[in-house]
Image (cartoon, rainbow over all chains, first blue to last red; front, side):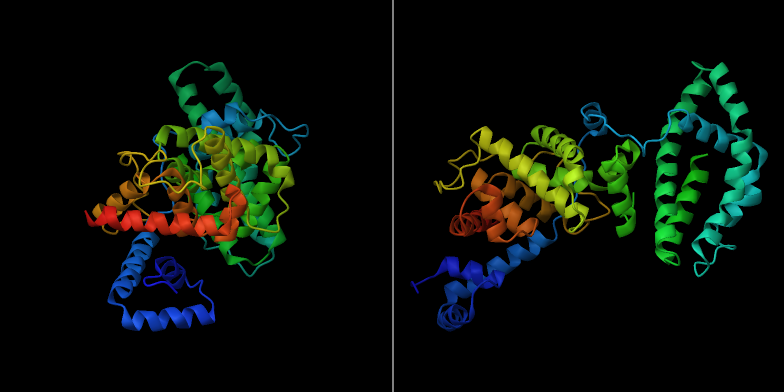
Length: 202
Length: 189
């Protein structure tokens, strides 16, 4: 071992030294104040580094650029039909207008009627009435939005379509997850949160 | 957007692999922060980092069919991101790990971009010290910075870094030692 084995000090701090080398370095540290200071400094640097954030926000949203470069898959079985986005926003807007969410959705998603111990189908069924009622009336609203296309109201609805489409996609995934893992409380909580998100968008 | 449940992520990956763009967007929204952080720390250039982050997601889309699901999706994605950055750096002659030159000689960058700030939700401790460290990391020579970011921030082992960057374990250790020595010196100034 050299007089000041600084590279070994790195491995020592990282816990990478094997038994013999570790013992030899330990013996050296007892005698060498400089290397002890190196160990302290390296540990301090490691602690400082460990506190760095693991995420950073880019200055702009990069999704549009990514999306423009994605090649469609040959099989698009899982992709929603194009008409479904407007249908969903229409459905939810109508839902708000007639207060169906007050009567079914909100009350249910607040959790009073949801028991995670129940069968997945039973839990999922508690979310269904609101969805069913609005689906029946949605077609009329889609026609109305189509008639008003180009107006500010329709443009605002278009933004809502995008947001709600994302929420509905998340809900779809969570419903599938709950079917695969009935009784998973974390999934039920997430599902409830997504439904709450849906109502907050309105 | 909160963290995904394991099964939720697995289902999103499966849907995205079948062509579901909404599912892929959700994966993007969940992981863009980490992917961008890897890129910007490795290249110390926010504009290039944005391009590379986009490249990483495009490649992920193209290769989702090869994801086996044995590992978690995020570890597959982050490793793919590192590969994208390393390939790009190499093709532009910016990553020469074997050359352990004098301080700053192999193309170090000056300072850290102003917007290089982590999410306030994930880090609020001593922002002055943290930015000093970010700036010091960004100013490291490319090879030393790459190994420091991969080992000390991203948590890869030396043998993994050697594999990803096409070098040896010894070179990786040497570059890490050099990076830490330079950082200690720069933070003491």
